[in-house]
Each structure stands twice: as C-alpha cells, then as structure tokens.
Amino acid sequence: MSASLPFYPVASAICLELLALFMVNHIWGRRRYLFAVFTSPWVLVPLITALAVFFMVSFQCGILGLIVFLASAGATCLLRSRELYLDSKSTFKYELIFSARQLPIMYSRTAKATAALMLPMAFIFALFAFSSVASPKSTVNGLSVPSPAGVLADGQGKIPALREYYDWAWKTLAFPYVNLNSEDSQHVNMAFFEQEAEEGNVVTVSRFVQTEDGIAQEDEAVMKFDGKFKDSLKKGIDDLDYPAIEKLMKSEGEQTRVAYSASLTGKNTASTVRNGVSLVLLAFMFLEVIFMYLFYFVIRRKKYENNK
Image 1 (tube, rainbow, N blue to C red):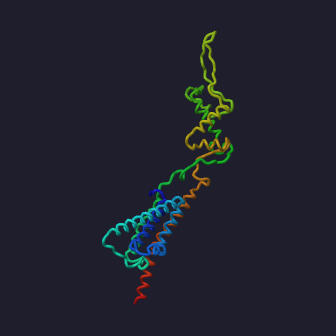
Image 2 (cartoon, rainbow, N blue to C red; image 1 turned 180 degrees about the horizontal axis):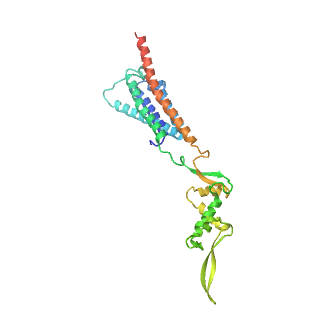
C-alpha cells in the first residue's frame, strides 16, 4: 500500500474519521445524542473533510468510504440496541442525568487525542513526500500502452506500421527455407534480410522426384508473399488473447505507425497533477487538526477570563 501515492490522503482522512468517532464517545447513549453529534462543528468538520477527500481521490473510493461509514454507523446502532436489551434485563437500572447537549464535545481528553493525532498525520505526510521523490521511476515513464504515432514518410524513424509487420513475419517464416550461402564462404548472404518483401515474392525449395527419364529436380513454391499470406497474418492477430500492439496496427491501417507510449505529450503530466493534489489534501488535513487544537485553547482561555 505504501507504494500507492493515493493511499496517503485516504489514510489521513481515515485518521480524521476516527477522531470524529472518538469525539462522541463520552456522550454515547445520552439524551439528544444524535442532535448533539450533527450540530457540533468538532464532529462535522473532520467527518465532512474525510468524506470529501475520499471522493476527491476517486469516485469509487468515495463510494467505498461512504459505505464503510454507513456500515460502521449501522454496527454502532446494533451495539446500542444490544446494550439497551441487556440493561432491560438487569435489576439495577441507571439513568444518565446530563443530556448530550449539556456536555462539551471538545474537552481536555479529546483535546489530547487531537494533539496526539498530529504525530501519525505528520508521519503520513513525511512518507508521502519521501515516496513521491525517492520512489523508483520506470524507464518508460510509467505504464506504456499502444498509441498511434501518425503516418510517417519512409526513412523517418523506425517506428513500425503493419507493412513492416508483414515484412518481419515474411522473413521470420521464410527463414528456414532460404539459402544463406554466398560466393564468399566466409560470409553469410544477408540480401534476403536487407531487402523489403514485395508483392509476389516466392520462396521455393528443390525436390528430387522419380520420372520416366530418371531422377529430376523440381522447384516447389512453399510460401508466397501475397494477399493470402497477409490474410493469414491478420487472422493470427485476431486470435491473440491479449491486447497486442499488432491489433492496433491492424485497426489503424497499413500506413499508420504504432508504438508503445506513456502519454501523447511525452510528459507525465497526469502523475504530477495527481501528486500535487495529494500534497494539498495532506497539508490541508494536517493544518485542520492543528487549528482544531489551537481553537480549543482559544475558547478555553475566553471562558477562563469570563469566569474571573
């Protein structure tokens, strides 16, 4: 998980969600509990921020985070129902005097928890900074996918088109039948590989057959570079069970050159923007916790001065 940069904003958002749940722990089960929860900024601010971050990371992450939150709320309600059921069977019953609205959400204990939350959030922020800078980068600048590279003139680069694929397949399949001997026995005849395959090229093999006049040599055509040969290659491309680059070549036509590319611009712009958004979200959530802690002391100081 630490190798996935979007993981870090989600982890910080979960910390805020846990803080919101901890805030209401001491008023659980008291009268007007839900009203106190949904009107307290100490609970709503971190909770809304967490859900907003989930959806900003991705829509799927937001839906999953919302489902998990609703499931947690449902489990809490079931736990409350069980507690009420067990209390109803007890001979001794107690009644909570103060309502949830009469007790402060933020007090010394929850303030300490808010301060303690700064440590894991600072650690997550540091891990993100380290991962985004020091993580190994792929030599191809991320995930590469087949992309049309445009129609290029002959001799303008070595990016292949479908016609180059035909030529490569012809030379590969015909290789076992080609005579590579040359007049100079010290060298191999490379003319077959250096010349581009042309329509009508034929590969023949010599056979010796018995005739009425004795043994005779015949040349038999085993391969021919024609439309039938190309159709067999296209059928082989269609039969591939993975998204091969040859399939894109076939769909784009014989003149369109195709290559593996990380992006059409050659720059990893999307990754840079995504990392920048994650950095802003992490900084915002960290500062939010700090402001909540400082704001508590400002309020407490005002109450102290008013009570003098």
